[in-house]
Image 1 (cartoon, rainbow, N blue to C red):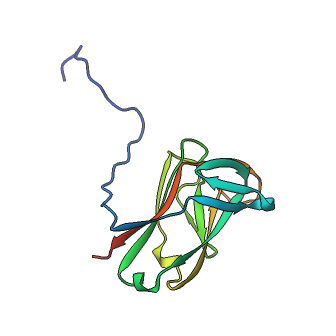
Image 2: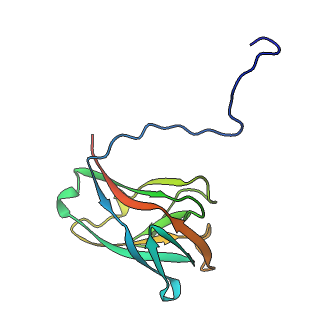
Length: 143
């Protein structure tokens, strides 16, 4: 670059990754049950500590598919998810609007699975605003 040249750039950290196209998806829109019996409708928003939903995962996916939870939020995104009691976090704080978490290792194939969206970094049960635009399970072939 020469002195005085105009250029465009990005300030801060930039994270790039290539996300392959899923072979299928399972939409998790609808009602999630929150703390104190409050409901979180996805898409939608609520003030709660966590929201839970049960999902059946077909037995034929085991060993043939990777399952990743995809969440997008315009603001106040959950910081992670518990899958059958195991905390799978994305960050220690709300960072960006998208989460893409591989939850395969914590699933029970051919059985009901409990997914719990977690609103706070330490998993405490203080209520916080949570908003979700989209939530789904994306399926990928195992290479």
